[in-house]
Image (cartoon, rainbow over all chains, first blue to last red):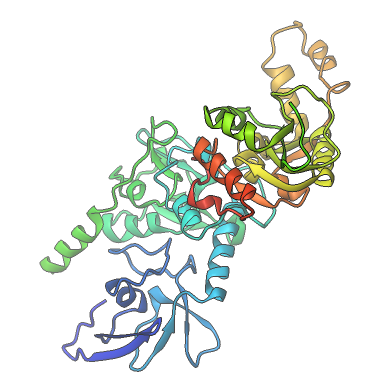
Length: 242
Length: 188
C-alpha cells in the first residue's frame, strides 16, 4: 500500500504503548505486524486487495468512539492505537464463535483438520466452546469439478477465493450470491463448478482458502494442506514488471 | 473400592458419542493407578453401579445430547455434580452426532430404516419396523451439553488426548480451573 507519489512522509504513532514510526499510507495492520504486534485476521491476505470483512482486526483509536479495521485504516501522525483491550478480545471471541455457529465446522471429520486458520484462531483466542446456539444449516457440497471441491459447510465468506480468482488469475469465476446468512460463494452464474467455462482450474482459490471450504478432491480427514506462499511473490513480480 | 470421606469423587458418563473419549481416558495407562489413589470413581461405563450417585465432585461427560434419555441424564448429572466437565467435541460442539441435524428426523428414519434397508422386502413393512417405541425418542437436534445444562469446564478434542484429560483432572483436583485450550483444540 505504498503511495504512488514520491511524497512519502514519515509518521510517528503509538500502538499498545509502543512508539513507532512508519511511512504515510501504511495501514495500522502492516505497521503493527512489522513491529511484532500481532493483530488477528482471517479475511486479510498479503497480495490481495483489502476486504475488511471479518472484523477480527478491529482496533481502538484514541479520540474515536468507534472501532476501526486495522487492515483498512491508514496510520496518521500522533495516532494512539490499542489492539488488545479486554473489549476487543471479547468481540474477537464473539466473532469467531459466530462463525462456528453459523455453518457446520465439524473439525473432527474435516479434510483441513490441523491445517485450518479458523481452528487455529479458536486456539489463539482461547475459545473452548461456542456460546451461541448452533444453526446447523443444510448446505451443499459442490463436487462437480474434476480436481477441486467446494464445501459450503466450512465457508466463512472471507472471499479470499473471489479476490484471488479476479485479481490474480483474472478469471473472476467466483463471486458471492445472497445476503447475510444466505450469502454463498458461486461459480459464474451460480452453476456447478465443473460446468464453469471461465474456471482455469489453476487452484489458487484452494490454496488461499483458510478453512476446508475449498479443497483438492481425494483428500481424507486432515490431509488438505494449503500453500498460500505463492501470492506475495506473484504480486511482487507483477509490480516489478509494471 | 473403599470410599473415604476425604477423597474427591468422580463420575464419567457416555451420552451420544463413540466412546472414543473414554478410550482416551483409558489411555491414561499407568496414571489410572495414580488416579485410583487420588479419587473414588463412583459411576462410569467401566464400573458397575447403574444409577447416578446422589453427590459427585467431578463428572466428565462424553457425547452430545441427542435423545430424551440423554437430556434426563444431563439434568440428573447437573443436579448431583459439583463440577461438570464437557469431555470431547461431541459434548462441547455436537460434533459428528450433530451432523444429523441438517435433516428432519423423519427423513433420517426413512434413510436408515427404509431406503437403505433390505429386509423385510416391502418398504411398507420396513416402515412399520421404525424404532419408535422402547428406545428413547430422538430430540429434534443433537446439541452440545451446555445448550441444556450449565457446564463448568470445556475440554475439546476428538478425542481429547489422554494428556489433556490428565491435565484437566489434576488441575481441578488441585483446586484450579484449567484452560483446556492450552492442551487441546476442536478436532484434535
